[in-house]
Length: 278
Image 1: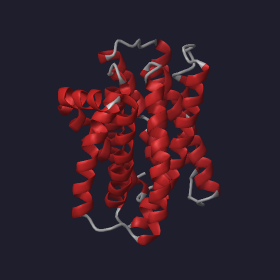
Image 2: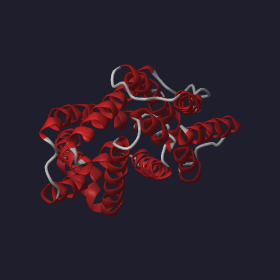
Image 3: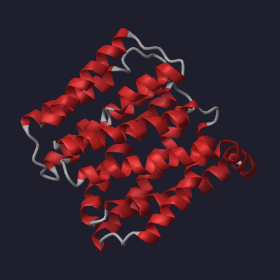
């Protein structure tokens, strides 16, 4: 992987970990998700006006992505309301790269080197291993975690292909996010009530604007990277965000940093180095 692309994806991973931590740290994850969803709508609308339209071939992917992103968003917010960030994040972020690797190789015919195979496998196993010591996940949470994992696989594949066809990865994502987050905002208002949603935004608008901005920028960079490098490489490297999640959880959310987690992080670092060499 090109060094510049490598650094861009790592930066996106940090952004991803940061906005996930913001949602999980809130006393009401649905209200917090509304807080940054409502700011994504005008942000992406501005980009839609300024940027060229995506290529027509990418519109079916945009439609499919909107559906999958809604399922993903609801499922991960639901999961965060019932579990620690560092407990569930490794599970639903660690398994998708392995599935994406197989789908990309057999369906998309991506050129995956032997080092690339090893890198994705090592990275994923390192991520998944961070959750092995936890026994805090109940049955309902397991269902939502599995849903999140498969949604990540689906939108990664859809958006990776869609961004390539669109010829305009930023415009592609602006359309996906504008429609998706508009629908999601109305959904949360219906579920939580208009007044609680608006009151939460009034009291936390700076946090919402910040989270919305880094969420869009981070995923935009991921889609751009998928036009420059094999999708499974980018998908796996993005999940090194778990390292940042562990640090954020330890420093700001009073979550424990055990020797076991440290060893898992070192495994992920080895995987990231291999991805750079792939």
